Length: 492
Ligand code: FAD
Image (cartoon, rainbow, N blue to C red):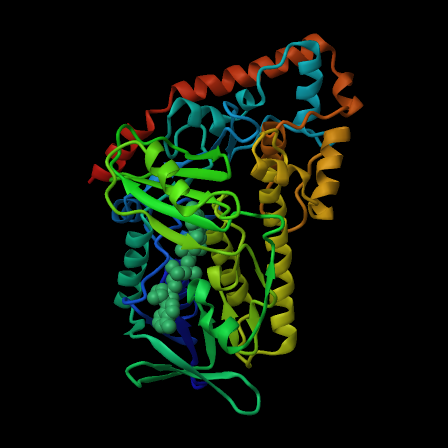
């Protein structure tokens, strides 16, 4: 090809930087020339170990072999998240990756389930979801007669290293060094080059800002502001610590609410990832650390690491010839493990809109509108977990009493009044997700669709009973998750 390749410079080598490098080299390698600059001295945020099922499609795009990836990153399999103590201490529900029940075109499953519940013939909602039941039973398999929808837990450090090795093997240029200055064109303001502390100059046509919370290019250089969402998502600190595993790995993440936030437990093959997320307005760092260390199981392997963050979104993720990914572009907190997914969707959008003819306002406007829409939907979903609670502490009272986004208010009202849930166009979370979390957080719909009463109660009870029985049977045939992982990684 005669046209010169577009020079892409990726600033930052955390998960976002290496995912960008992997996709661009794999899919656009013939058209672009990719360089990645990172600083080992600065390091990465070091967290981000739970994912959602969309990661599997992205891994296919970058050509990862699943078994190789699971071995290299110490990964386990994830079927959902168990939310403990969220509505009140002692409460628990699973938001699984599965479909709940079977819907008809006239009415979703919950209408039929609510009718059966009124008749006293329904089991708890998760009895009708394969993934939720498999998670509860600690069972898992890939393949077999009924496919489960799954994601992974993995070691973030190993993941970035794994991606790096693969990218470097396919010819990507990596430069080690601290970016000291960003050079802009005097007229257009576009970024022209990164200047490193070593005085090396890295020139490019398109710059991808993966510098994490520093947002060195999009924020510090181009001055794009940040829309603060802390009035809806009040957590602003996390402490992360790793511990030795004390038992078989569960096939789900645990998200355990505490007096001013929540804690995560992410089981890997070789250790447990733990962390506490909290609002510094309601809990001091010392108290958070005591709470974290007092509740972890197993010997701690490292000192707890404090991470400060501000929930919100970059007003424009794409500005001039700079596209910001992940933490540099916004953060809605880790409760539903959405950040890495958002990097992946941003990257697929970038490939689809790739500015081979130079960045234009029309391209960046389209990218930014999609990114904003996507992030606001995710935000609403997460705000809902905080808002719908019946806990008694000041933090939780404030969450209950806060003014939530109108979009979320309308969604909750629709479910509360008439049991309707929906997935908007291009929205990540499906009806089953909204359903599991709204019911799990204690919303009881006042009515359900009359179509559910077209079926005689005995027939409805029979249909639901058969569905639950079928799922229970399928789950019994699955191996224990830990046994599956052991076999999977040691297979030749
Ligand atoms: P970083 O990992 O911070 O990487 C930034 C890179 O930029 C580093 O390589 C650094 O060296 C480089 N850099 C910065 N400044 C310079 C400079 N001046 N010169 C050269 N290089 C520089 N996401 C999920 O999907 N699931 C989760 O379970 C999850 N949990 C999380 C928990 C917490 C507490 C937090 C804060 C985030 C979590 N996330 C999670 C988000 C996830 O961690 C990030 O999406 C992911 O790690 C990507 O981060 P990053 O690459 O943008 O930033």
